[in-house]
Length: 255
Image (cartoon, rainbow, N blue to C red; front, side):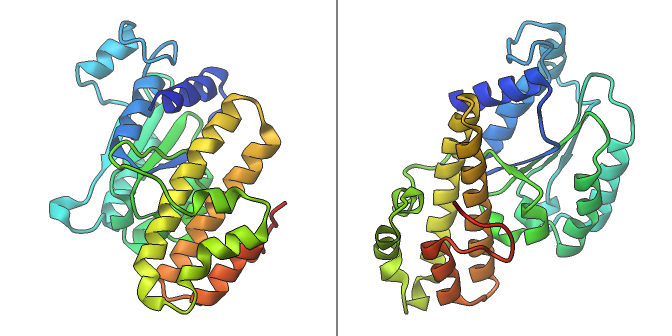
């Protein structure tokens, strides 16, 4: 998580942060919070803000979790949104949504307006290992800076997806052609690939490669959309074609 810490230190230190980050690991949220709730945004562990956070001060923090392993309901989201309307004691107010794929569809729709129009200083972090289960409208508003500390290995598709060679991409996806029994395996590979490419995105941001960062961010979003479409019984072969040929999913385009 070192480059993740460096990334958050840079964006929060420079004031260039977004209002909504999607991660795939609860530990990545902890990393982000250690940077955010630090006077110097370095997770120094020594300043007054770090000590308050370490000692359990959560006045500026609201956690959303599924109750008893069920769903995160609309009324819980309403409570979180009310929390964001209270001026934070420090610089930031944070809502952290754990296992965000357990948000009901209604709860996700309720969150949308707050995600789009978050009060100044409010930051949302969502954690899920199943981003394809979130609504496309939610996914499209997130910055995918995803960690993967609890997983091992990456996706076999990552290199092909980053390649400019369409034949290489077709070869990588060929084993899924006409094999709908591979649906869940493909979804898993797409999620892992999105995590791999999000790590590349962090490095591009840190090195100031703005054009590459934009391309990578777009690719992560498209992978999430493809996984979501396939999970929701969308057109299996069509989604493969869109990924192989880098065609747009209804908007934008790949360079």
